[in-house]
Amino acid sequence: MRLLRLVPGEKPGRPSQPDRMDAELVAMAQAKDPRAAALVWDRYAHTVRGILCHTVGPRAEIDDLMQEVFVGFFRSVHAMRDPSALKSYLVGIAIRSARTMLRKRRVRRWLHLTDSGELPDTASTTDDPRARAAVKNLYALLDALDDRDRMAFVLRYAEGYELTEVATALGVSLATAKRSIARAEGFVLARARNDERLHEYVDGGDSHEGGGDG
Amino acid sequence: MAERQTIADPRLERLGALMRSADAPTAQQHLEGRARLVAAVEEMRPSARRRWVTATAVFAAAAIIAVVVGWRMRTIRSLSYEVQGATAAAGYVSVPSGSQATLAFSDGSAVVLNGGARGRVAGTTPDGAEVVLEAGRANVRVVHREKTSWVVDAGPFAVRVTGTEFVVAWSAGDETLDVWMKEGRVVVVGPGGEQGIAVSTGQHLRAASRDKTLLIDNADPNATATPTSTSTATSTSTSTSTSTSTATATSTSNAISADVPSAAPTASAATGWPRLLARGDYAAIVREAREQGEGAALARPLGDLRALADAARFTGDSALAIKTYTTIRSRFPASADARTAAFLLGRIAEEQQRSPAAAQRWYETYLSEAPNGPFAGDALGRKMVIVSRGSPSAARPIAEEYLRRFPNGAYAGAARNLTQ
Image (cartoon, rainbow over all chains, first blue to last red; front, top):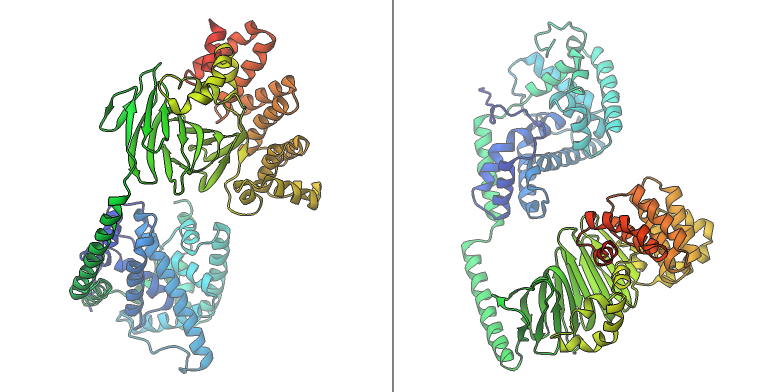
C-alpha cells in the first residue's frame, strides 16, 4: 500500500506560527465560500489524522472522527476570534474528539459490548506483522494510562511536540505537562520492557531498525 | 528547541515511530474524506430552493416594513441641524484656534465645538443624533424629550445621552476622554467600560483607552467654566450658564483650568463591589464594608479594594478611602493600582483634607513611581498649582517642565501664565 504524505514539508501536528494563509482560509470559511472545505481539508487533514490516530490507535472510526473534527470547525468558525490560529483551533477540536472517543471506549469496555471492550481494528498500514503486533500491544498498554497522560505522551513522542506545545494543546501548565509526560514515560517503558513484542523496542540498542535518531 | 533536546531517550523515540508507522492516509482515503467534508459543509448551506424561499420571505417582509416606515416617516422627521460660526464641508467642522462653532439642532439641542476642535454629525434620527468629536472639546446640551437618544463618539468611546448638559473633550494624542457633567446623566461605553459607566451631575470622568482605566471624580463646580466660557459668542443654548462663570473665568482662569482634570477610579469589572461602583451605588459598597468589618474588607481582592476606595472617596469618607488606598499600596506594591493610589491620595489630601503639603508629597510620589503614567500630567499640573500658591517663582520651573511635556495639557494655560 502506497503511503502518501499529503502536506509535504509540514511536520505533523506541530502548531504553526500565525499564518496569513490560515487567516484567509478562516475568512473564506466564515464567508461560506464553497472552496473552503476542500482547502482546509487539504491543508490540515494530515495533522488532524495524526493526532486522532496516534491517540486512539489505528481504527476504522478515524475517518468518521476526522469528519466530526472538520464539520465541527465549520459549524463554529463564525465564532473564531483569531483567524491566524486555525491550526491550533483544529488541533484543539481533534484533542477533544480523541478524548471523547477514549471515554466511549472505556464505557464500552465497562459494558462488555466487545470482548476487549474495543471495536474491531482495521489493519494497521504497516506490512510488517511484528510491527502490527507491537502496535497493538503498545495501544493496549496506553489504555492503562489516564487520558491526559496518554495525550501528553502521544503529542510528545508521536507528534513531536515541544513540552510547551504539549502544555498549550492540553490546556495545562508546563509543569503539569511535564509531570504527565514523565508519568507516561515511566509507565510505558516499564511495561514495554516486559512485553514480548515491545521489549525489543525499549531494550535494544540505538541501532534497532525501528529506531529513531539513535 | 532547548526543550526538544531533552528528548534524548531513543527508546521513546522508537515507540513514537512505531505509533506513527501504524497509520498513514492513502490518497484514496484523503480524497474520500475531502469529498465527504465538502458534501457535509454544503449541507450546512441553505439549498438553492431554501435560499429562494428565504429571499422571497425577506423581500416581502422588507416591502411591508418599507410601507410602514414610509407611512411613519411622513409624520416623523429626523432632526435637522445647521452649523453656526464655521463652514462645514460635507458635514465636517474644523474650528480654528480661538474661535468656536455651534451645531444647532432643530429640537433645541446644541453642540458647541471649541477652538481647535474637529467634529461632524454622523447622522440624525427623529430622536437624536450621532456626533463624532474627532479632537478637542465640546459643550453639549441635549434637550430631553420622550424618546431622546443621542450619542457623542470620541475615539473608541461612546457617550450615550438622554437629556443633559456636559462638556466632553477627546485627546487623540493621549487617547483620553474627559466628560464633565453639568446636569443629568450620561453613560460612557468604551475600553475598560464595555458595559457602560454612568456619570451623573457634578461628576467628572476621565477614560484612558491605552490603559483601559475609567476614573470618576466629583468635578470642581468651576471645572466646566473654562470650556463653557469660550462658548458665549454664538451659542444661545449655553449662554445662560456661561454668563455666570465668565467673570471668574477671566480673572482666575489659571486656577479654573488647573482644576479641570480631577480623577478617582471607577472599576469596570462586572461583579460584586466593582459592579455596584459601576452602577453608582457607592453607599452600598461602604455599608457592606462596614458590616464586614474593616479588617475583612481590607483583606479582599484588589478589584474590591479599588471599588471600596473609590466609593469611600465619592461618599466623602476620606478616612476609609485613605486606609483602602494605603492598603492597596502595601498589599499590591507592584501594581498599577498602587501607583494610581498615590495620585488619588494626593487628591484626597488636597480636596478633602485641605492639606496641600501632603498632596504635593503624594503627587511627587506618583511622579517618581510613574513618570509617564496616565496621571503624570495631572500630578505635575496640580503640583504646579500648589507650589504657585506659595511662590509663583518657585512654580516657574515646574510650569516650564509641564509645557515641555504636556504642551496641550489641561494646565498649559496656567503654566504659560506662570512662565510669562
